[in-house]
Length: 324
Ligand code: ADP
Ligand code: DP6
Ligand code: CO
Image (cartoon, rainbow, N blue to C red; front, side, top):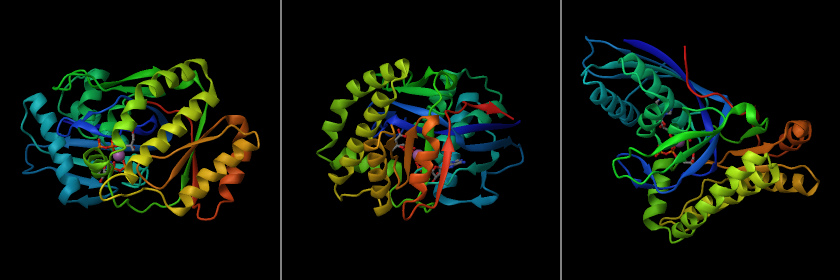
């Protein structure tokens, strides 16, 4: 009863920001991402009769408290699905900074979903696996698939129609995503807490939701047409609108730091010089820059020259779940 799975992180071009159901993790809006080949998680789940509780090791360190609790609650769902009340040892390695806005919860919970389902003997198709991963972390439902992926919010209150689908395979379009690493330190406000506070208190939240159907329809067309300027400008505007909602929350907050702003301004100035580059930012200070392969040297050089930038990690569109 042992299995190992690998999943990659993803970066949202149309953000998931807000839940309509907290316990089932149902989103308030449909959203869309690209799976990234540069960041991943590998997780081994071993169910064992002699264990009295679940054990969780992350990057070879024993984890207790809240993060163990989240893994155990997730495994409870897997146990309920299989009808087998047996505890597991979970060993996970993040090839991505944890809880820093690089979507470790996406690769982490997608890998956990795939490995635990296989280890306990469930044979789930990708749709069922996406629904399971969703209940661990919303963004994880998209990491089941490679390439360009849409999480369709669904309408049902039981979540049966809320899962991800692939919009285009990774081979459809060779774009590049540079993750500009400013800070590997953990964020103060988790994605979960940040979106909850925003939904409950920000008067800007209604405006955020209003624009989503249009953004989503247009970006899917841009991906189908390989229209880079259109895709990039929709993604950048959607990101700015999401981050604007946090400033309206009570208490107000932002994920941005001074270097975040410098990277954003550099991307805008690259565009003024004729290089099509666009940014997007998840719940953290680090910026992801979208550009085309032929502009790699120019983009890398400019990004490296920014004060406060630690590292730049380049991704292409990546693969979905695999078993090792
Ligand atoms: P991020 O930007 O990294 O996704 P979040 O606040 O959304 O930040 O999620 C971070 C949380 O995801 C961690 O505190 C932990 O609970 C969970 N997590 C991260 N990596 C893993 C993993 N490999 N296995 C299980 N859970 C993980
Ligand atoms: C800003 O999936 O990390 O990155 O569902 O509470 O685990 P939970 O949150 P999470 O939220 C991601 C938010 C985001 C946008 C996105 O990835 O779509
Ligand atoms: Co996350």
